[in-house]
Image 1 (cartoon, one colour):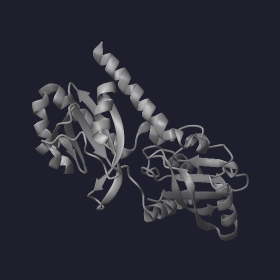
Image 2 (cartoon, helix red, strand yellow):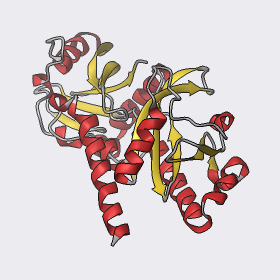
Image 3 (cartoon, one colour):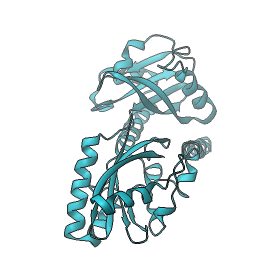
Length: 294
């Protein structure tokens, strides 16, 4: 019975987390982006790693956390498992936080001064599992970046895994647009289907394709929010009061391609961020891909 209650609480917490993340940008679309429902590739990897680590601790107890320090089973490329206790004692880590092993991290803060370990512990005590966002040093690019910790309690041991939400670059956006334009020119019907295929080549974390019919502004495809398909993109108004897609179309009709910048919801972070979008016309359609600026 306890395990059933805990699973229910865990599911409820995840649902609440998604709702909070999406709430800030509800005006952008009526339904959440598909990444919020299915998880990004890196998030799925983190959850798989967490599942393995939790199963290990359930079988071996607190002593088993030592395996996180050196066990390859608990390291997945840039991801690693770590563990702490509900009293703040940091038990083990397979990554950069290994320097904290043996310390009490209740008062440890992130780069913005947020006591995120304390928040992890509070959620673990209340719900048995959770998700906490914080800002941490990213060794991959030597700067502070937003990071997400997913965790689960096994008795008084909290097992966790963290990941940096991925962000595409301007070059990656241009390359994806080039590929999308080629696909649309070759077979429009097949391309529109591929643009919305969750595990296909045209959805890469926070990078996706959207296509609009120039004559009336109707969305023909949207990789992040399929529910927009069939709606009028020309009616979308950004926080600055401009008609976002209508402005793209006006530029494209004169020059066949272009770029613009506006505020839009990032499907990975769930937050409204500055997006830089590149677009081209293919026949009677506008094909676009944008990336989110840091």
